[in-house]
Amino acid sequence: MKGNDLNQFIDDLYHNPEKEISYRGVRYMIRGYFSHGANVYTLEVNTIEKSPCTLFSHTSSERRECVRSFVSAKIFDGKTIYEAEQDIEVLYG
Image (tube, rainbow, N blue to C red; front, top):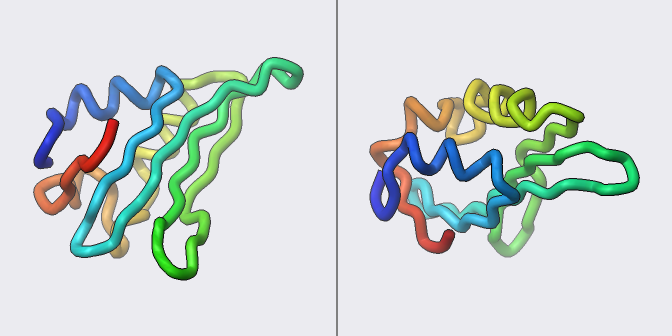
């Protein structure tokens, strides 16, 4: 991973992140946010392209469940973040 340490990147996901990354020419926005009224945390990944779409979204009362779901999701060309990390560049966040 360029621009961030993978362990720090994962740790940041617990703290309402807003990160822009690039993987093989595709830009992604990773966002985490807490909904106070519902008392839940949501972690989501969207593409930032001409036709943006949500690739991943997980909501739970437990932040670790959201992060656990994210790290096991095959978001990056059928790969998890651990499998794709060598080709990921953090652009923001």
